[in-house]
Length: 550
Image (cartoon, rainbow, N blue to C red; front, side, top):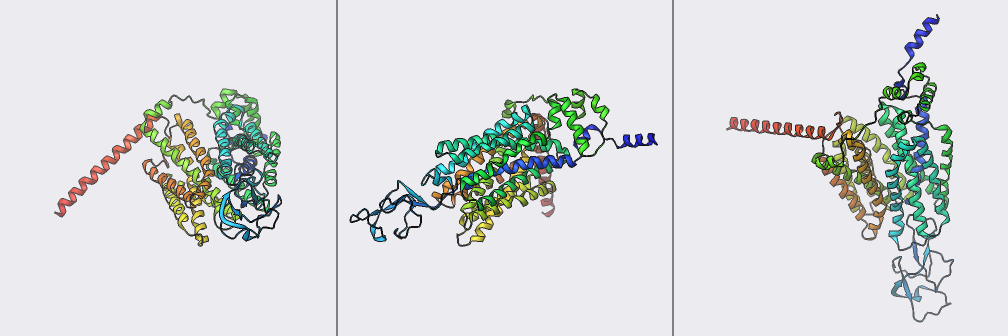
């Protein structure tokens, strides 16, 4: 009987590498921890949309009102005056008298002080009236910090581990609370950049951790769940901002909770692959045994105990890949260079349009909180649509048409009159849905365009372009001061150009990933030769048919 149980136990045992491929309770719990961090960091990432949002304000008429002036003053003239000038008083006006509509002339003069309708945003607190470049620059400065995080986070996660990086970056985001205590614009934007540079690293750490513990069969699932965590953070932020409009209270609500991520020291587990790669054999074995226990799977504990560092690397097929090809090889290859330029432009466009539409949604007709929430909700079906179409049809066509139609909808929304509120909002939101499809798809597509030898480096170039798109997006509301149609026209133009550029890149669905630049060049030449042969055969057939007809 004992022998039978022993044999059954042996049969139930799985290979050590399969420990990471069995998606069970352990992965689900760790995914929740990683996604919870992404939700909070996303709220911090887009805080400037409402915290530094525009306000209604007017010039203060110091001769007629004191420091407790109200925005809606009945004695102001009915004639339209812009927010940065004030009507001049009559020569006969005597200081100390009550002001009326008749106290003013038609002439105007520059403002030196303002009355704000509310103090809900930093514009009132930092007195940024009539300086749109300053308060729109806050979002750009934040994304400069995110750019720094993008550059540094890869090295941090590789050097110090996924777990430690995620904890430090998530908890470090709490420094954003300091913004509520400053009255200096320059101190404010410095803290804005610093918090982003610190917090942004948690995105990379969480995503890498999810991919590594989820197994190769669940990489797409990892990406989708992480994206949904980001979208959830955007939606929750809109709900909180709707009920807590005062910016200082809003900041305290979204910046204080990340302190709970200190508990991840005990709750979150490190990636076994990182532990093995960095020679932490004892820790890796302990983590693998913990995974097996939580997922209720049986592994050969004796075999695991006997494996040394090289044995574990061999078991998990981990190799220290040496990059033999360099930037010089990239510059020499026209095909790779073309892919880098097109991929970077498309990544720039996806980020620029995605975040640009999000930021500008608050300027649509209607309630700004509702419009912002609707724009975030459109990302949910966009993610599913992207995953379905790219697996069903291919990578290239869905994105080509996605960029084209998104561009057309953006241009259309620019010219739809304000009176057609729902038509204007609908075209805007469908454009947001389509750019969400492209935003997700272009990351996968660019990864498949580049060979293994330079994939990491060139994806970094594309990620840099994406970050630059993020930086420019918050500045687009300034274009409204020139013409309200300009932001949408810019978004539409970039999207249409991106769709056109994708006609010059190959389809990658179901194709084996290339390992070297040389392979890419040979593959491209082979495809061109095949196309020429097909074209020549078509011309021969066409000539033969003409002869028959003749």
